[in-house]
Image 1 (cartoon, rainbow, N blue to C red):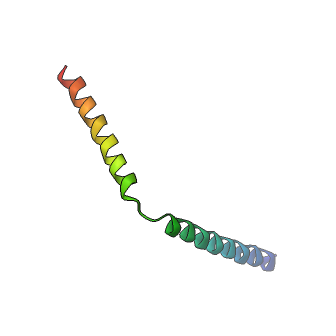
Image 2: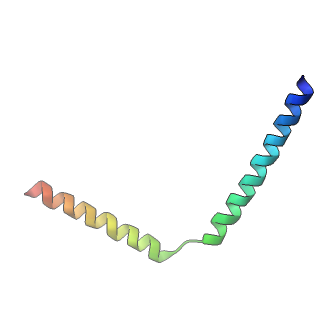
Length: 57
């Protein structure tokens, strides 16, 4: 009974480690893009300005 549970536990640990490695590879390959950050800032500032105009009116 405990041997089966330990085997399943070890397999789950291995799967999690593999998925973690794949996630790290995927995030490292995409990198940081300044254009994406700039567009996010512009969109958020436009939303903030629109909310401020609505509040003033």
